[in-house]
Amino acid sequence: MIDSRPPGRRILAAVAAASLVVASGSARAMDAAAAQTFARQNSCFKCHAIDKRKDGPAYREVAAKYREKEDAQASLLHHLTSGRQVKFPDGHEESHKILTAPREDIENLIEWLLSL
Image (cartoon, rainbow, N blue to C red):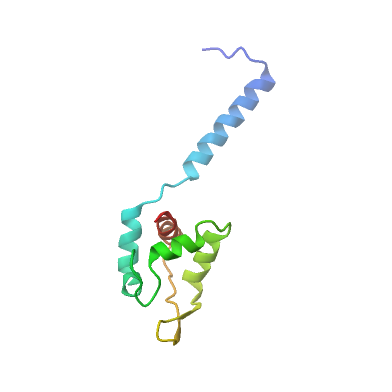
């Protein structure tokens, strides 16, 4: 099929099509099962549960706190990778476990958590 559009329009169409391919290729869908497996493997459920508070807040509480914040992803990524101090119900503080897994795995966990 011959494209009868002027050369300038053909170039714009090609750029737009290429942009869609790049954008869709880089967009990764959140994988809830993988996120929960990752959380189990990293002992996250030792201190957290989805619906109830343990030593740490329930994941639904965390999601409610961060979901509407513009920097939610970055804040949670920093929290999970920096060893930030966390306060326990009895008042003592400890460093949060530092996750050293591939960034994509941690980001998937965060996306799942925020989806709750």
